[in-house]
Length: 101
Ligand SMILES: [Zn+2]
Ligand SMILES: [Zn+2]
Image (tube, rainbow, N blue to C red; front, side, top):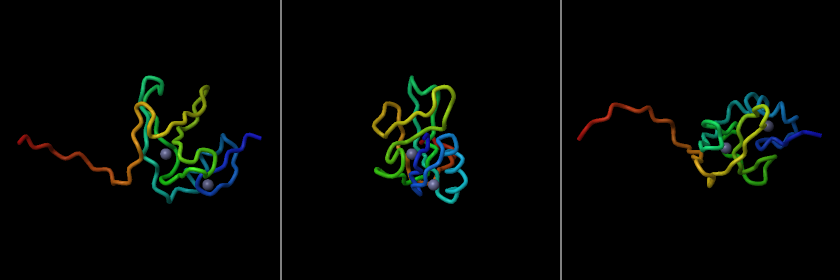
């Protein structure tokens, strides 16, 4: 069994289908905006889960998880990891013109 539990509805899904499940079944939930960017991440990784995944729920709970990538699979991290940016509920601000004052 390679099923993983969805952290949002606790349904088991094959690991290879989990990203798709979250993207479709929970499309109405705001995305988790946490990212990881360090020397091991191979670029900036974004959490594929939705905002509010919590400890004790599903396969990852409070951990952020990147999309599956071959051959390394998923990267899992938390907010204390090197290079981690925590999820924020603030709306993305469009960078406006900067005034030099
Ligand atoms: Zn789900
Ligand atoms: Zn996350």
